[in-house]
Image (cartoon, rainbow, N blue to C red):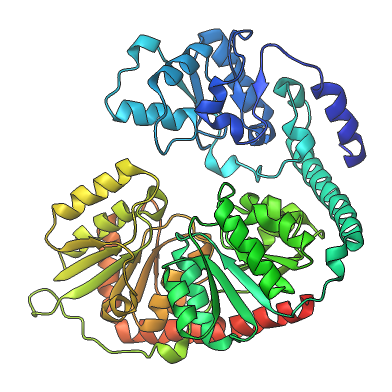
Length: 550
């Protein structure tokens, strides 16, 4: 279908109201508390379909809708698709969840139901039923994350099924990019007329990292500090973080915030405004998705806005795409994902994280087999949550104990899933060879002591933990993700990658074999970091970008 005909098609077919269906206009309707506020009395079924589901094969969606209606299902999920992408609940299921009250850490109906069941709450009174629709394999899933705002306004997904899937995706992307270009042009036109645009800029750069939980981002900036100018660069960060302490020690101006610059923090907003007026930066460089809401405010103060993207889920940064003068991706696949969403509307720069090699000399520590009297030190760093895979790491470590005298230290705060943290805590308590500590101090010493760094993260954009470990001289053993594939080449013996289905015992066997050639792995990993991930190079690219924008 031609792109030109897509807009009228949406208007003609999807503007007519339907009383049988509700289509989610984004993430808001996946929150159970907001769903409760909808007027569901007029609907026999409350059917919620995430917008991305409209781009799935029509046969799959049609079958799901048909089964839900004919079988009276309360919840339908599709095999191969995350449960929160396409699910259907009846009004009685909605009522049962509402009556149960809020469940911390849950944002979708499936998550809430699963958590309630796991907690022992009986849902029999609500007569809730589920069904799996086994029609779609993971390999068949297309890139369906990009949708124009017009598509989000759809009311009837069934009418959308006649449009070929490929045409829907391309048309949605084109519309989104065209709308973004028009919006940015109008914004620039208006900003040029504002008096504040004529104020003299100081030529300085304000780097914002308001989230205290971005340990990887904080570590990356700490590595770059020796190569940045304290006279030109200032930091706005959460008080008490390692980055705040390190930047202060090196003479940088550090402005502390206390609530992560949250949208509802009037105090932090006042701090930001005071900082913008005092420093008058030419460029504001925001790292993380937390400060996106500040982008319009920053632009109206006359500063250029740069957004640093460290997540493979680049859709979280869509608000920044409307305002950013440049988007910085930490890996090429992140930059490609940004380009797929924004097209030519936004400048995209690939600047990888780096490690300060001058402060990380290689060291040589013998690793002996079990019984030789020396322990192999293993390390796992990251927030304790399912996406970071600490349980998988514990499985691998248990198998490694069969070959070596070894000890594991887990470093990280508890994430957003209390049940997962409880399970990790129980496993740690049951083993005398495993300890768990929070990010309470500089972990550089732990990197220097570690022989093996285990990374269980399923989805990393690059992997600062791996970079630090490779530079220090540890063997990195990581879950195969796009980020770690861009960091480690197993064929060059730079480290080890393991898949989701590989047995823990097999991973342990490969670790033991690699430790026998540890010197080779250390040399190859160090060479890779020196070539592609030197913090000096990263800082030079940042400085060049800032000079260009200012």
